[in-house]
View 1 (cartoon, rainbow, N blue to C red):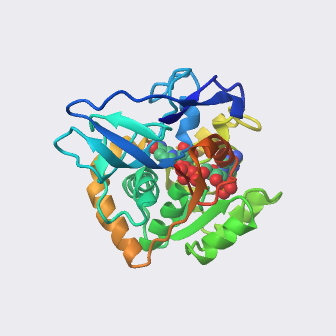
View 2 (view 1 turned 90 degrees about the vertical axis):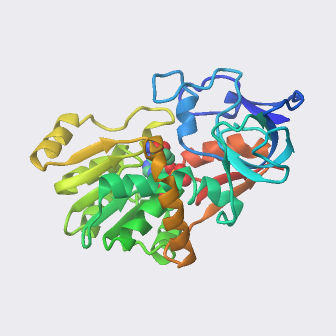
View 3 (view 1 turned 30 degrees about the vertical axis):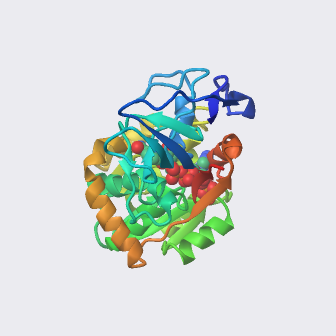
Length: 333
Ligand code: NDP
């Protein structure tokens, strides 16, 4: 089996030297176990947090340990009564080409997952994050304004499209004209703002003439700063991600926490952090509804597929900088 391990913890931004590729011989499959051959590896922003030795909602990857991540694969050999050879499965087996598992935390993939890679994207963990966070905490109503950044990624793109299905106005933020044009034309966002524009904050204000009712937080930093003054009374802010802070500097600009708290208080803003595992029980309903919306053409998705496990570290580093265009997936060869 080929696998990628954490060679050293990053100091500041991640570098290629933080990763190492290894070839290992797997032990024989025991009773109650099965062997999975990986087809796809999902690359997700949370993996950056696992590389640091810091208190968080999950333990860090140990130095020398296999990088954490979800794999879509095929059962190649089985001594487990519940899994037979040829079945398609997904689970958190890490950045590796083959793995032996007892099935804990694995899910079987039926033919709703078309293509199979959707099981880690629009119909996977990021999709459930958008669906549960927006509907449970954001609660968009017809005519309201919903703002989301990273709007062409798997979480942001679904947040915007579900906001539209619920009758709200969707205002997206993304990096660069190509992503903005795609979100307007293909995903149906009502307005798109390029966060690299020098007049970003003014453009965002102009795109939200009635203020912001739901800000689905994925980025933090300068984007949050521009959003705060635009929040309406009783605005909802599901705090889902802070990717601007993950890789290197913890924050940017002046610390205006007191001003932010004044807005939260005086406008009765609800700010609520969440980790998607809290809403795992919504998965059956989510899968039914979102696969139906895809079939009806109401939800579109885009995947950015990189070939070869060895290219995972570079693709991961690129994703943290916005080089991906759509859900970042590695096809394992
Ligand atoms: P994406 O595929 O959207 O990739 C991340 C994107 O973030 C980049 O493509 C880039 O898009 C944008 N970005 C990166 N740095 C900055 C920056 N400094 N300013 C503005 N935009 C930036 O990732 P996902 O959809 O998988 O994840 C989005 C967010 O959701 C992340 O914060 C992630 O941690 C969070 N998340 C949280 C979960 C939870 O349980 N709470 C579960 C899953 C995801 P662009 O080029 O458009 O700027």
